[in-house]
Image (cartoon, rainbow, N blue to C red):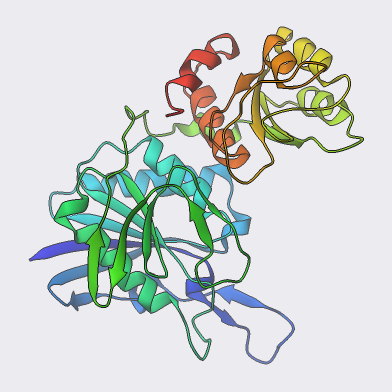
Length: 326
């Protein structure tokens, strides 16, 4: 019989309103075993908790803890796959980190909920069922880390939360499967890059900040991030990766001082393409910024932090980064 390990981290799927205080808001309280445990259709499921928190509170140390737990579960010969329940706010970052360090042929699937456990119509149980089907699917072997939500299974890389309240909040990535009635229909296989090592303790305190470009923005925040201890900065530029006056000059100074600058875009979809001069993307890259390809700022930040925590110096960040962009 197929066996799946379910790892809980909290999030809306495990949250309930606080009794007697309607204004207090939902808080993660339900254990992973409350979601599913024991026999489940043609598979058995065991459950344990790694964390019990809402994902907007997660730190890099928590992401490392999750990565270690998933790595251990996948290495266990008694497990045929892993499901991680997680808050949706930062699920895309955790999923991408797990995918970067994924070495197993088995599948790890993240899921969660948009409505709390005590909602009249909770969506968590259905999402867990779909995640279990994906994690146990023989056809999805060698797919790395996936996200299952509201009838769609997509790759972790490139996915992002695109709606605050919709039952299907994630877009992007590659759709690898979807539900047709009770059946999981596999449609694609995501490309896998060579895995990086599981994050070390240094990952916990690696500082990578994000600075956003907008009309009238100055590069002051870029300089402040560096002076306050950032080891790298992701510049979320406009359009295909541009920024306003004086950014290129500041990037040059920052890079010369030993801090990596990753050029991403604040646009929700599409790659960074350094086309423009006059301080635009072409000048930023000439100044030393590293284009992030089609990685959004948040996943670019995770990759930069992981590389830095493994001792990749800023001077070698460009080649190390490029190896994981496609």
